Image (cartoon, rainbow, N blue to C red):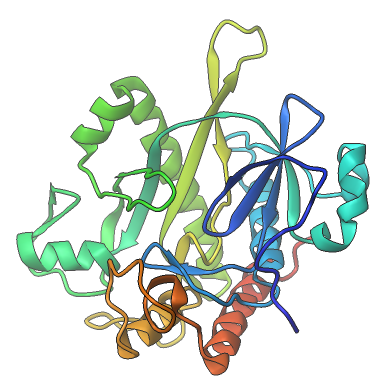
Length: 312
């Protein structure tokens, strides 16, 4: 089974290439083609080999959540059916099937909307040093992987490709995008997280934290802009999922997400911030060992299966 690392659509215009997604223009001025490749990144570095079928798994889970959460906020999804997309796309069905979405164009809000239900990852690292998370003061005595009394909205900057996102305080975020828009995003992100976390828990999965992205589109009457949910949503790439079975505070948790890959990278000598270098285990020269590729794929597949079980 091979991984799709790079898309090849000679007749389509590539608009941007992210860590995972390739975005193409279409003959429709109002729509874009989102393609989820099998690339995988860790610590803001794209690894040299990918995870077979990862893009299809990400698309499956995003489509599930877009549908489930549509009553909270509209999203950019239009269709995942190739035959319903503009005609010039049809010839690439073999590459696109299962990993492509036609989406509505939107003005991207330059903010990563992170919601944390549990203290882990970079939040735990900051808390141990300063007693804060994104400069928000928290009670003393919290332990790793402990559930917060209430979910925290903890924004970060949305960096350009190749740069690092930066955790910022709510006050900084409000200054960045404006107080009114910040408050609207904060409220809806918390509602999205809470709804998703309750559902996941019923499926035996803890949603520890996640990242949402939002965009603005013209309102129906053209007099204002409406907020919509964009990009991917609640995938193992953008979220930290833990199995409920065996959950115990005071330590790190096994996960269904990229943490398994990150842990291997660190154990193999990778250092965060090392982005360039000669062929070998440096920057984009890093190659994931086959057993880690399989382990990562299995964890993604299990998360998707658990969360989408019994869904139509």
